[in-house]
Length: 396
Image (cartoon, rainbow, N blue to C red; front, side):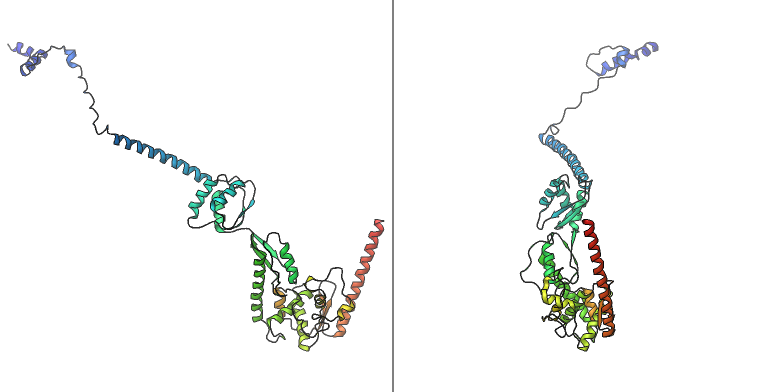
């Protein structure tokens, strides 16, 4: 009986037990079928919330935002690379930023001249770099291969090209006006009325393109006023000069007498000594100014003996003391020489044939120096005539 019970405890026995607890009919299965895995349950159905159109739209918008963000980053990186990368310019060139020109106008001009590759990138990049600042007007030197960022930085700094206008010492106001009219970079007209002789300081003046001739003229007048105030304040106490204007008059004579800086204080000392003694200055440049004014003596016109004796308000062989106005625009060094002249007893000087002068305290010594100078002149004339004769004979 135990054996039968143990056999019933097998598979069939378990099926019988199940029958006793379930009212459904029992289907006999084989051992192999009993060992097969059961089928997986079907996936759960999507909820109504997952199928909602709002969720679908939000998913779409999120995808679009990510897509646009990727595109934006790509465009930004491309623009940044173009803005900071080497430019297309193959040689250094100049570019003019006009007063009042807008950023887009400047960018268009740069692209038109082949200095930048894309004006839109330049404008956008410039706005981000400049902030509240602006591009300064002026003429700029753009180096070959300059990036857009470098060009923006240059124009933001205002370090434009500076041109130079130079006035040599000893030129008259008329001659300065002629130089100003001929200066090609300067703009505008000059006033009809000229400033007084001696009112302009000969120097080199730096300016940017677009500067007017009148602005340079005003700079020269202001520079002369400042220089004269400083020099007059540092003058020697015992000068026979009563006003700064008299200092300029004498300095203009010194300027025309010698071009050598080392001689100016000594030449000034001669004239100061003469003024102290009540002697006439006897300066040849004053004769010329009295005859020809600010236009100057023609290069082929010599000074005749009759010119020396011809009375004019400027002829210091005829008039006593100083002429009424300067005879040129003296430089700073000539004015400083008059303000602090050499302390000598010299009363005369004459050319020495080397570009300088021979000085003398007495008339006899001076006459000896004059005779020496005349011999030098005669020898030079003779040599020039011989050279001319040789050239004529070779030409024939």
